[in-house]
Amino acid sequence: MNDITQSADYDIRYTRLTDISYVKQWVKDPRVMRYLPMEGNQHDEIEGFCKNLVGFYRFEAALTAIYGMKPIGIGVIYLMPYKKVAHHAMMQVIVDPTWQNQKVGRSLVKNVLHHAHHHFRLEAMDIEIMADHPFRSVLNTFGFKDIYRQEGFYQRDGEYLARVMMGCQLG
Image 1 (cartoon, helix red, strand yellow):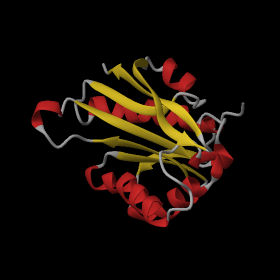
Image 2 (image 1 turned 90 degrees about the vertical axis):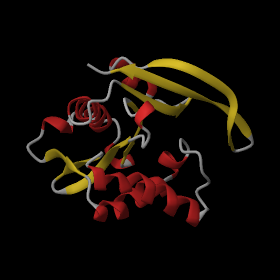
Image 3 (image 1 turned 30 degrees about the horizontal axis):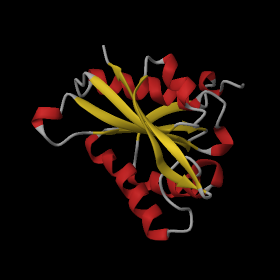
Image 4 (image 1 turned 180 degrees about the vertical axis):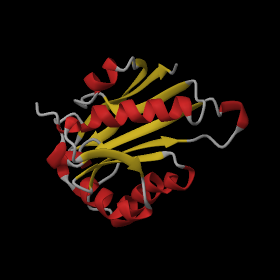
């Protein structure tokens, strides 16, 4: 596994609205789409997902990994709008398939968790992920534990797959 995150060409910055064009490309790739809860041939669904994901840039709750000034991944904190639950949030991480397995996802998780704790004063972070997603092992290294598992939640290629809600405490 290469580690491009140590390169001088690698950085993390706040997401910009213009990053949406990159996110759309990544999401449409079958290597990414297979782990998302939508169908790859549904234009409106993909548009809505990407707009929602990138839209948190307005609150500085989305971070973009860049390499050579080009976006290669995004990490988003889905902030809660209600005071009673504003101490925790959900997150999402998507990495350009070309740059997967090069520690970009790990870097994004680390930066998102730090940002969530120190900028937003969050106490806990959750993520919903397919049970067979290889990224689960990365999440485990940051203290994420399974909260619950729901069998048959996703349908992919005629097969029913489990979703797993994972969570970790911050700080």
